[in-house]
Amino acid sequence: ERLVEVMRRLRAPDGCPWDAEQDLRSLRPYLIEEAFEVLDEMDRVSYGGKWRPFAEELGDLLFQIVFHAQLASEKGEFGMADVCNAIADKIISRHPHVFGENKPDLKGA
Image (tube, rainbow, N blue to C red; front, side, top):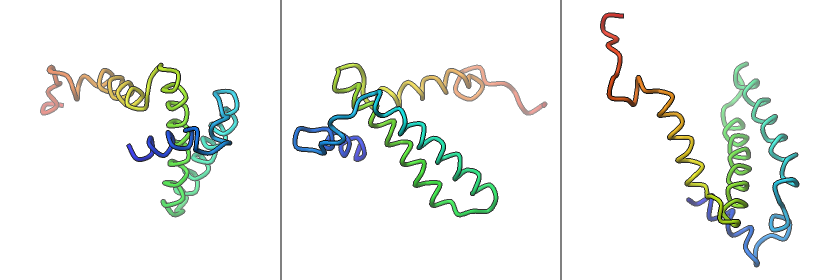
């Protein structure tokens, strides 16, 4: 909620002029750049690097997602809660063995 509010404030009329002028097309390179930076940090961590920089890069990527959700929210399409609920629903539906009523009997496996 805090991050969503930070993003909303940046896009507000009295917010940041740069953030206010961004749109889906202008944000494309930043989304790609942040995804690659996450991958770089994943490699560093897998070879013994520190985890904190990985967390920071994940945060940068998450901010891109929040930014895109804010753009959609401003158009009345969906908000960040919708994004979170959509992925939760998808993950639950893909794991009926965990979340469904008919869980497999793993005792005999």
